Amino acid sequence: MPLKFYFLSTTTLLMLSSFLMTANAAVVVPCSGLNYANNKPTEADGTSCLEMNSSGDAYSALLREGNGASDLAVLFLHGRNKKLAGQAMKNHPNGDVVRQLRTYLNTSLGLTTLSIETPNISNDLNSNNRADFFEYDAAEAIVFDQMQARFNTALDGLKTQGIKRVVVMGFSMGSRYATALTAAADQGVLGNGLDLVGLIGTGMYINSANSTTGPNDIRGFDTLGNLALIDSIPVLDVFGDLDAPAANSATARKTAYAGATGLYSQVSLACPDYVNNAYYTGGGSKTYTKGNCHQLRDAQDANGNTLVDVRGTANSPLTTTVISWFNNTDFDAVKSNVISVPEPSTLVLLLLGVGFLGRKSLQK
Image (tube, rainbow, N blue to C red):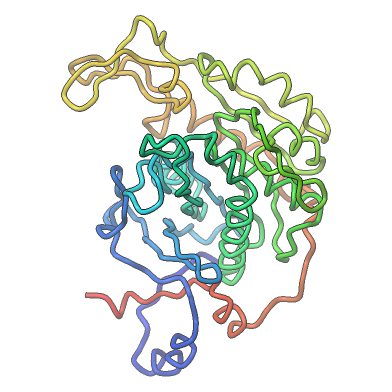
């Protein structure tokens, strides 16, 4: 059953009002009000913008409803925010890579897609007014706990709407979160009664200084350590061929995976020659860089003509690679080790702040 945002009758609203007075349920908010520096979604493109809450931790999320033909959803985790907490987010739930896939998996396969804001940090250790990876690494234990709470809230919200199976997709920093959370599910740490049946990592890096160890040896940002804990969930590992940190560690990631060889798919996508080609941005032409390959960015010339289409269309290599993986993966045969718990009542879910509740009738 797809996620629905119903126009509720006055009678129904009155019946629910007592629950809403005390609940932290996810609510629909205007997309125009999101604290994003760029790439804001709009309701016109089919997105429902949500504010979610995990025990007082508020964050945004972007939902596209499925066509009802599948009980499978895709949960997206974006790349590292480059802004500090309190600043407008530069990377966010509609950021690079996630933006294309959350849209095309919905329109091409009819799947429900939910992209959630991942935790930000405020510790500017080098006073450069931006959030760097080493600062995330230093705060790993805190942000990973926060990420796990958001993850559980999102999964439980999907479950109340009839979703039974979820594929987790992460880009860059989001792939670290996704790998650790999938490892936790495969090890039985996450007990939400919903099956995780796939992991997609795009731009997966493996370096981590701290590698904080949690329950069942789940290791925060340590991609290799967490892949070594996943033995029953299929993985799609996608990276740009000129994204050196991801390309050079590809063999190590595939080797670390604990499952059968056939469950780990790895695809290298061709990026433009980032030394000699250019792409068009903000009215001018810039050299295509290694970072653009990490983001699998399309290359354009100074006139805006596409030189290489990597992820920008429904037929781009990134999109077709991911869609092909979905079409060729037997999710019914995937044995998930997620611990099942009794189905909680709607009231309990509302009190926990994990229900998706449509309130469009309350908006102008």
